[in-house]
Length: 427
Image (cartoon, rainbow, N blue to C red; front, side, top):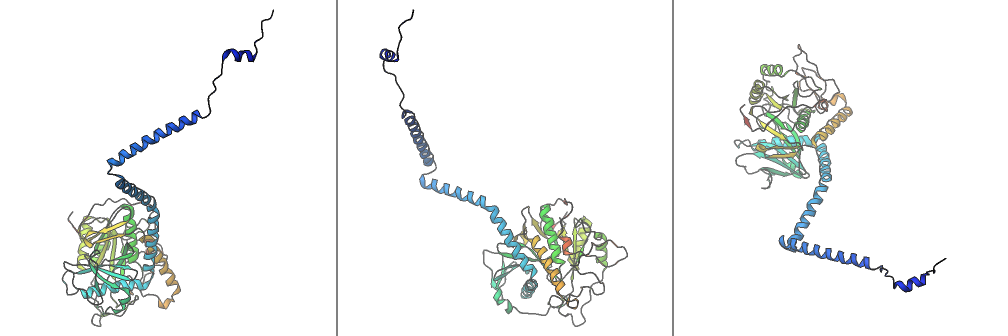
């Protein structure tokens, strides 16, 4: 027996209307929540801005933070561009023989002008496009002679000169007993190439600071002194570079201490112009060594004080010395010289200059090549590709090395701790 059949119409009639949600309710809820959150954020931001001093100060602080952020992200690119610009400027300066002649002439002329000023020393030259500045160490800077001008008060103490007027500098004949300048580039200061005369002070120069940066700067300085026409006869001791086996420092010092003093020229002390176009002067012996013992440092100081040699030392030594300190970023400073420069581009620039010397020597005929500084002791040219000199017991001549050897990458890093130094030390 079957019951009554319930249809959809009967169910709808007995159950009443069915509630169906409108599609706009969820969107309206989201909009209301977003508006409330936005109002709360505006009120919170307004409260924070009031605590910081108002809208104007807030805008300034936000702008300052954005500027700092932009500079921080752009600093690596700017540093790379500065480095490349410094390499090009130093390489152009060091590769041009006229640039070296100009630096030595500026040192000579400044020294002649300061001859009557007690204690005044011209120790550095800054060359920038169109200008040259000679830094002078003196208690009271004298009035500059024509065509020099007094340097700007904000810069280092010295005399400035437009390069257009460099031809107006006086030219004097240098006697044999005069001290020959030994200028070497140490880096860049803004757009200026900084050169230091190693023979202007105590003739004992030490390089200290970060291990890797100190090694690069030390090798670049030694390679510059070993270039043709530098006026130096470089003697490299053992331990300076892992790939160069030099003479033992004790044997070199003994030989230098017993060597006779050079005789003056027979023509009243005036010599003929040498291979770099200057009035001829005897080459200055430069001893390049690393980490000397206290006794060796004392002997080096005595030789430097006597004027017999110029000593370039890697590491700290006791005595009266000029100290070049370099940090991990290649920043070299010497407070006693009022010197600050970036030595990072120097290594690549010296390599480019040495290669330019090689190309120039290949183009020159054999008769026009520079004469050796010691005709009685024939030796290979400084830039010839020769193997490092070995230790010979019976050979009296002092060994030398090449600029390329001094700039070669060491096989193993040298670890020699150094400490902060002053001009005079007593260990």
